[in-house]
Image (cartoon, rainbow, N blue to C red):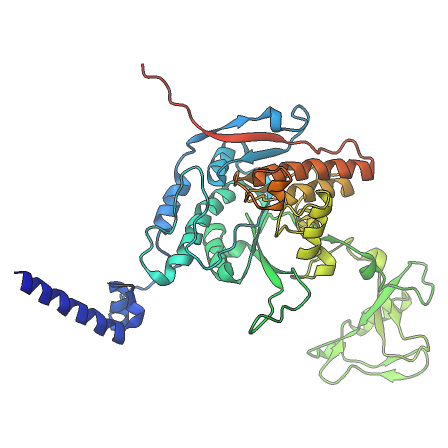
Length: 477
């Protein structure tokens, strides 16, 4: 029997090696993926469906739907201005925190920004002190192991984030190339593909790294989704001096500065093809394959209203005047956000270092200007902003900064795992023990600095601290 067992084992091993050779895509480690093998052999199911899946997805859905198992314990000693502030700072597992927030904030958060840990290429585990859960532990397919771990961490959190968003709200998520494609598919499923707003490109660096072999990557992605695209609150960007500087008033028009636009358009429409005689007597026709934007009758009305520009000599091709006073007070943002608009990683680290008296407390903070742009685009008045991977609390800083600039009364909710700092780090040597310590101190310092610089003592620069604790067991009987 022993010899027979060994022969059977050798035969099975030989067959496995043959499958590896012929169908490598159907083998993960020492196991055969039978579904992939059937597909490789042409045994397709009759009704194929498009779906995005990974090992552990079903468990992630179940985890999202499980009720909260802890409580939020107020920590007045760690708080600032408890009696007057509307801001919250929660320390603990963000999955549990999101479940807790459903009871008080479901459907009321106007904007969410998160900068989750990027997938570095190793088996991903989120340092979850609440459950000590390794999300990649059940992944059997080696090629999916790394991605599945990260996706299983993110899925339940995004599912709960959607529940917290207001119908007019939006979520922004920072990510790099490693998981951008997978995150897009996952968000399409959770938020709905039609609620996709844009993928913004942030130029996080401007100096090339020549040690990179193929390309020096200097950007990150920011995915944006609406809760309901038909009701999304989107306020645009304030017009800046560069945009307004394009307007001038060379003819001293009493309506003020203007800029001219092309009067021709294609393809040609017969009733809009006609000759125009300039004030200097030159006859101008539309370019070949084009027509004028307006009919001959409408053109005469525009001429009478001094809305046609023929150049300083009166013999140029006619152009339509557009007055600054008549354009929108805001601009639609481009999807490329350059470092001169919203700052960059080096500047972000510098501004945080200056706030902490020269101590580099965090390695990769985001710039205040970057998050402030998202706050300005989607929130106003007393809207609520949530960040459940808050890190050094840049989002809280950005909310207070925007309130100082436009008089808003926005409030923030920060959630941060009390992750211990490395004892050799500059932050630890400066007296900080967790990332939460850094975040709370950053809010204190940034708020006090804003009040000093603006004189706006009415700014809400406080925060209520809550610790997540397990529910105490009730005594029997």
